[in-house]
Image (tube, rainbow, N blue to C red; front, side, top):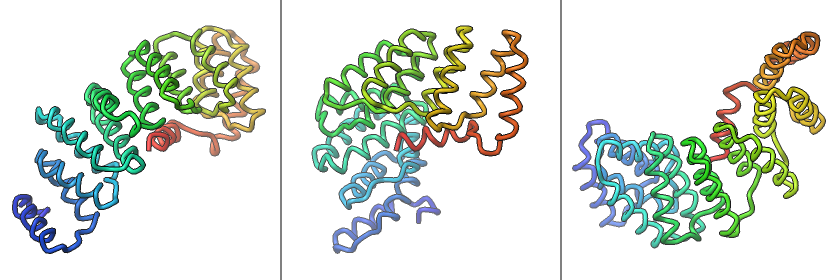
Length: 286
């Protein structure tokens, strides 16, 4: 029935099964959710999401993205908020946080960042206890990508006031958001705070700091971060090598640039590339 697109008949069949107390598998709910979302059937999509959650299962990330994409074609955001508030009130906070995170991320991923932020604000106003650190990290990332860094900084303060302790992801998101709008001085302030709070910098942290220093013409600072990360056992990425080599050539330090080029080429098979950064970002948001 799904392949034939007969969602009305499928919905009736599910109702009959439910009335007879016949258990429907979560995979079936997920399948119907995807099909209903692709046809912009918001009512059936919401029904399937609710049944999945009440069955103890969480919709897949792919299903959530399909669900969000349906709202690009219809103007039913008010209905969505009402639905999400109902879900939050009927589901325990321990199981709803992951779902809320997937939904907010899905709307952002489908090009509806303002809607993602609106969902967060509506739910924060209703029941802040069902939001977690991952939720705040996703919102920080959305604000940073939109260049709304003042709001991002306010959200970081709110994160801490709510009682959450920022982690490495929180600081990386903040630093990268500030880096993109050229506020390098604040990047180093938060890097200092990050280390003071015993959050270990990782490859993403050093990539941002090396880029910031290089763009400012401070090659010595870039090299200092480069050595620091290697001493910590963090393998530099191809992106870092290329950034350093480019800036060394600009300052006519050809000898060191050549040395780093040879080092990069000799270990290129085990260095992180652009695809690894995308994978890391996907992992930190789920």
